[in-house]
Image 1 (cartoon, one colour):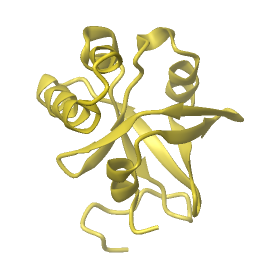
Image 2: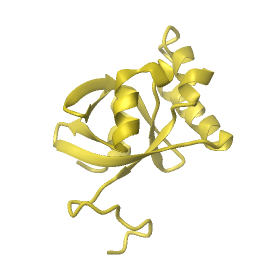
Image 3: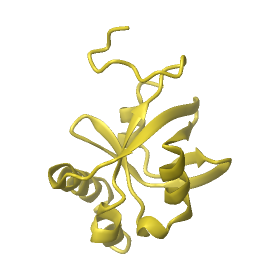
Length: 127
């Protein structure tokens, strides 16, 4: 796989695995980072599992890609993620409002790939 960000940017519906459960969700790339959020807010079962574990794996054609997740609380980043969802899923007028409304915004999570050794790679790419 070229990169997780390319996968998130180019795949309409991604499959995540958390707590031995697989769930299809929508994900985006914004400002050089990957993001996910729950269209059903904090009541979503997958969101509760991921929040509790702090990690998940994207199930890709090339195999699982483990990531850590962190809640995004700043409005500027949430706004950028809104714009990314609007650009990527603008042709889904029935569902898009669920992804950019207040309940979904509150569940915005940044995803960061985990290296094979289980460590998050340095931001500058050095090892």
